[in-house]
Length: 156
Image (cartoon, rainbow, N blue to C red):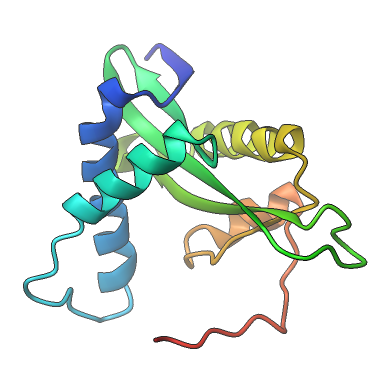
C-alpha cells in the first residue's frame, strides 16, 4: 500500500461524485431509511462542484493508493455576519469525508481532515462546522471538534 494525497481536480470528479453518492447512501441507510426512489444527485453534484471549485469556495483532498481514490474530503467556504466566536464570519462546512471500507482505521481520514481544516484556516475561516455521521463522531472528537447543542435545522 503506497498512500499519497492530492487535491481534487476535474480529472477525478467522476470518481469523486460516485464516492460521494456511496457515502451518502451508506450514511442514509445506516439509520434504517431507504433512499428515495428517483433521486439522482449526479447532475446537481456536478453543477455544485464545478461552480465552487472554479470560484475557490470548495476544496477537496483525496487519498490515493496508486491511481485509485481510496478516501475523500471536502470543505465548502461560506460567509455570514461576523460574531464573537468567529470574527471573520467565514465558515468552513466539512463534507464528503469518506474512506473505502478496506482502508479504514489506518489514519487516512485523520490526514484528510487535517488537510481540509488547514485549507479552511488558510481561507480565513474562524470555525469549521460538520453534521457528523455516527461513524465520524470519534474522528472529529479526537481532532478537537466540540458538540454544539444549539444546532437546529429547518427543512424547506
